[in-house]
Image (tube, rainbow, N blue to C red; front, side):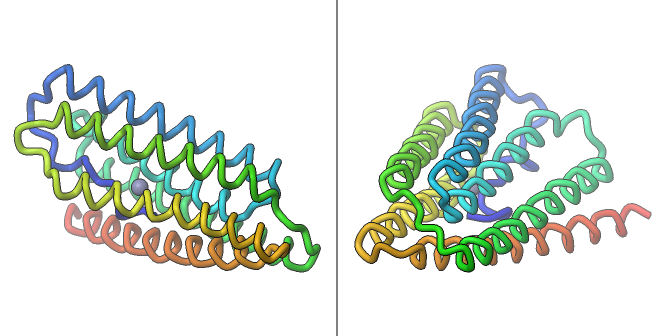
Length: 206
Ligand SMILES: [Zn+2]
């Protein structure tokens, strides 16, 4: 979970083979789709943790986009793109925290069944992308980073499912709100780190 987890880019070899490029496109589409799906169902189920989990799909979709277009981009353009990514994730993180407070005050109890279902779908999506990346991995693509990224993403999805079980068990929104707040805070921290690194890269260029 967070901005830092899924960086398959930056180490792209100068001549990426078309097959691997296609896999990156598939990963981009799956992550973008899951971002939209989690937003829609977070609203339908009144679940803030689902909303928080969607931030990761947004960040990962942006990362796959960057790895696809990375060759055409200068270091400076890439750093600026990272800044845009971090800013949108930061805004999203703040929105999630606001949403959590709103739901706490309003006393809305999320729909545990939808949360479980979408959390599980997100888990399947993340594991599928990992299997694809593993099967079509590039010679020097870092398997460890794919593994770490998938583990972090899966932990986020499992956190949503655990929150759903907690909501079901307690009949309150608190498990959802607590998990959402933790995930949003992690996303904010990660976004801040990306901003720091991007600013450093921009600085070195001038
Ligand atoms: Zn991720």
